[in-house]
Image (cartoon, rainbow, N blue to C red; front, side, top):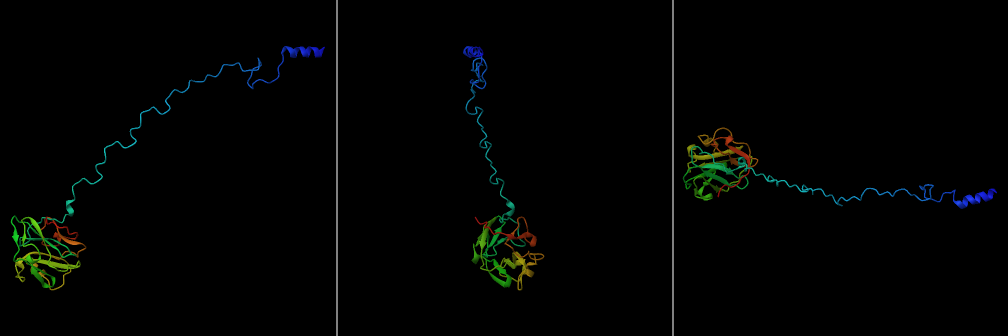
Length: 232
């Protein structure tokens, strides 16, 4: 009787054992829940639709200051335009220690002919200026001369005479000395009006006349400059 009843229950399907999905209900073995529809597929663009970054490269104005646009530093110029030397009309503006070049400047408004002018310096070496360069220094212009002397950085002098009367200090048109100058020299003659006080310091570069100076003492010269020709 009991076996007959069990067979009837199994035949009618009134008792089930497993075999559905793990999440199946007991109402037939398969999940009859609603299908998960999820949110709609993302319809955004595949790439970032934001504005392109226009700042990838610096869109600012190009730096116009890469090179110094300021005016050239006029303070280092060797092309000085000093006043008259005392008592003459020409000025020694530059001395190239290594090459022996001497530059003269004429601050007047008329050309100066130097037919009688003489160089004189340490050791009483001398010679005609006209034979070492141009015979005329142009008005408000420069001219370069080379007497063939050897200048020493630790001491030297140059005296420009109006003529060959070397014993008269009044004939010195312009004078400069630097460092220690041994005797014989023209220092004492220059003291008559072309120079005052001690010589400039020993040179560490070239001897350059400073702008707007009368050149009568050491304060009128730089001894660490670099010769740069002003002759056009």
